[in-house]
Length: 186
Image (cartoon, rainbow, N blue to C red; front, side, top):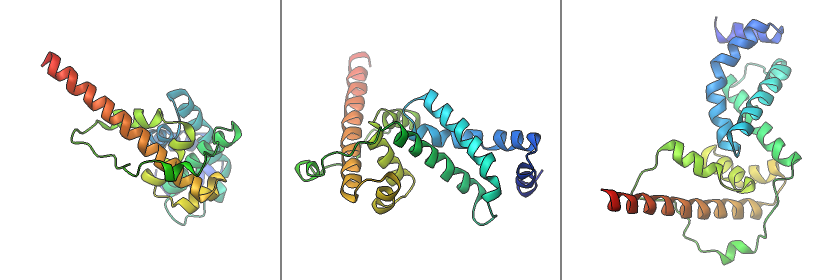
């Protein structure tokens, strides 16, 4: 069954088509949930909530643009809404940005496996993780982030800076721990 036919049947509330759509996209959308959620159970909840919203709003998809892109936007917005409801996003003092060091490039000679890097991103405080993912991984501008999250432009930039700073520290610690382990046991 083609995607257009599947979408049409989903608009008609066809359970078999909804199940097929879920099976086709659940893995890709779950990977996106993992980027925005702090742990596995929260990512699973976000995926379920997102598919409910997808099926409830599928009539609003007008065929313009990528259907997968439309669904990804719902997944991201669901994760953001979850944080807003639970008051996880607490702006930090914008003055701290100028006091922080400017060396936030996350570069390292050792390559980390993607799963390990995602795990480190998930450990970030929620306000930093959201901004980091939106800016670095999904290409949102600081202006877009500030509007979506209802924070100032400076707070968006500051949260990104802090996220990079924290990640860099975690990566340095992890790679130095791995190097020390290799030297001791190698």
